Image (cartoon, rainbow, N blue to C red; front, top):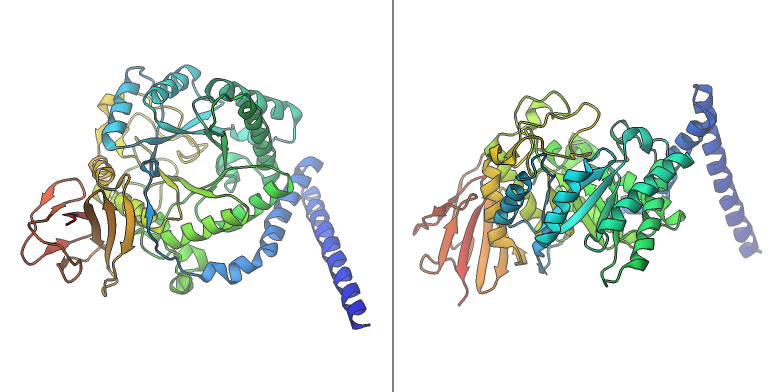
Length: 495
C-alpha cells in the first residue's frame, strides 16, 4: 500500500513539475506579448528565460556540492598548443609575413582567427593560407552579424548562415579542423543572440561540419567548439549545454572568454561571483573557475575546455568598452599578469588551451595597434576582422618578450607541483623539461620577498640559472633571489 502511494505521489509530482514548466513558459510569453513584442519574439524570449531557469534548477547539485570543492594539482604534460593567441590578417599583404614572423619568434603554435560576414575574403583567405603553410594550429572563429544572429528563426537567415559555413568549410576543412561557432550569446547587446537563436546557429554548423567530415580524406575529425560564454557565468553554460543535449547536437569542445580582470590580479578571488563578503568562502580564483567550467563540460560529455579570449585592458584612452579605471593596468602589469595567468592555467590542468587577445590592439594587445579604433557596435572580444595599417609599424609592449620567454621555458614541459610556501603571497610552480627543473616564481602585487634553498630545495648557484620575466639574466646570490610581482624563472640541471 505504501509503495503504491509513493509511486502515485512521485507520478503526480512529475506531472505537476511538467505543467509548471509549460505554464511558466506560456506566462512569460504572455508578458512579452502584452509589452508589445511580436509572437515570434515573445516565444523566443520565453524559451530563453525557461532554458536559463530550468537547466540550472536541474543542475542544482552542482552548485550545492561541486561548486565548493577545491582544485587539486597533479602532474601533467603541457602541450605546445596550450599557448595560443588571437590574431587577424593585415590590410597590407606584406604585413601578414611580419605577423607570422613575430608569432614564430614568440613560440606561438596555436592561433584563433575571427571570420565573419564582414570579413574581407581576400585578406582573410590569404592570411589563413599562409598560416596553414607554416603548420600553425588554427581555431577558426565563425561570427554572424548582430542583426542576423537575432533572426535565426527566419529560413532566409538560416540559409545565409548555412551558405557561409559551406563556403568556409568547403575550402578549409581539409587543413583547419577546429571551428568555434558564434560569439558571446550571454551578451545579447553585443551578439544579438537569444538561446534559441544560438542553438539554431550551432545546429546548422554541426550539420555542415558532419557533411565535410564525411568527405574528408584525412583521419582528423572536424571539431565544433561552443558556446563562447563571456566571463565566468556557469549558469549560461548549463542552459546552453542542456539545449545542445535536447537538440541532439554534437560538439567536441567547450569555450569561455575567461577574464579575471574584475578580480584584479589573476590569483585573487573574484568578488563578482558571490559578492565581496563571500568571496573568500567561495574561493573562486582563476584555477577554481576553470575547474568548475571544465567539470560542467565533462558532465555533458565534452572533454576539451578552452579559454578563447582573455586579457587586461591597458590604461589608455578608449572611446568604447573600456574597463573602469581601477581595473586597467600599465604595460608592465599587463606583461606580469599575462605570464601569471598562463602559468596558473597550465598548473591547474583544467584548461586545455588559452588564446590571449589580442596580438595587436591599442587598448588590450601585446603590440600597440593604433590604427584600429574599436567600433561602437561590439568590442574586440566579439570579433576583430583585420589590422588596418602596416603591422611593421606596430609598437612592441613588454608582453612580447614576456610571452616569448614563457614559451621558451614552458612549451612541451611537464607540470610537477605547486610548492608549499608558508607565506600565502608567494607562488612557486615546478615544471620539468628534458633534464631540467624549471621553477616559475612571483609574489602578489606589493610584496618583495627573498627566497632560497629553504623554499626550493636543490637550488645551487653552480647548477642553476635565473631569468626575469622578459628573459634578462638574473644573478643568483648566495643568500637567494628577490621575488616581486614580475615572474622569475629558475632553471636547474638535473643530476
